[in-house]
View 1: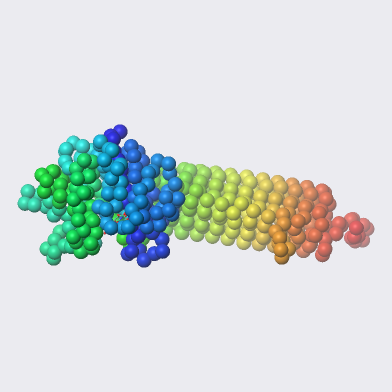
View 2: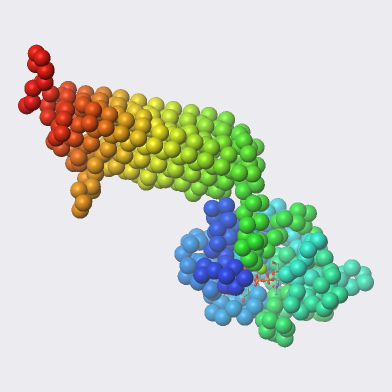
Length: 456
Ligand code: UD1
Ligand code: MG
């Protein structure tokens, strides 16, 4: 690995985002913008310095990574001024310095490698990643002389009418000789339309001093989309989603319609799983193989096993769904649930902090909150676990091989023993012992008697 120092600029507010949140903390594909930039440089760099300023504490705590050094830019006086805040790191450094902006999240590691190796071979003062855009509006333009050499970069706001016609743009990614960079930074001024110290002026300074400036033209223009407003953000989101989906498809996941399937970058999915359209899979979610998911599901921080059938319109959050389960349609599983192997949670069921044991079924129209259901138990349609007494939440337990009749209300805290049974419409306020059937309101033990039922 070459001795590379990387500096990532993330101090600006991002006024054009019109947001209370600093620009680099806006999310793309489930990750904050600047994290995308950093993930590409961890492998390439010996040291990474992030320049923070606007909402700096939030940026630091969101990134929270011991591989990163942070320096503060107290006032945002421009990209050149931002790099100057990392001056002591640059001075101590022998090898090249890679500079990236925190608002260009679509770059790939491959392109960065190409920039650094081109710089290395050329012995130039700096190498810049450029691209030719049909609509270059908003970007700094690359000005070349008659010999096609780069002589300077002009910002949109400072450009003349003729310069605005130039289609070659500055991506905001540079590789500098560290010694020359320090010199150039010391000579920046803020004599421009924005009254800022532009990093881009380091280029004209070095060129005037006789240093070579090497352009590296990016092949895939999409990579250097700079995010300055919400329109750029949505455009980048689309690219990231497409890349994630394509990576998953290459690993054997079927995504029926990638255009309408939204999967976060950290999500893992096993082969031969099929994802139906209009499905959102977010956060730290892992899905096994041979499962069927969707359509119209939203899954956030969920572990899903193999051979799971998750039917339409389910919303699942922070829970565990084991192998060979059948879930949905129209199921709402809130945080803290575990659905064990071969269990079924059917239509219009809501679960919260609930365990459904192996081969148990909650097939229709139930609310199961703060509950533990054993194995091989059937919960009849319309059963309600009444967990809230108006002041506190209480837990209920139903044992193994129990049978809860339709429309039962289990008034928590209450326990139904193994093989316990409740009649349809029972309101259970006291524990039900093993092998016992209760019926009625409030529920009482049913004893078999000739000609009818006897209360206990
Ligand atoms: C910059 C470039 C422009 C290039 C474009 C590519 C300059 C002067 N202009 O313009 O040539 O085409 O990027 O996307 O460099 N930042 C700080 N401190 C500051 C100012 C900015 O840390 O004082 C950070 C921002 O957080 C951001 C990055 O630097 O991540 C770029 O700043 P931005 O204001 O977006 O520059 P552009 O106008 O896009
Ligand atoms: Mg920008």
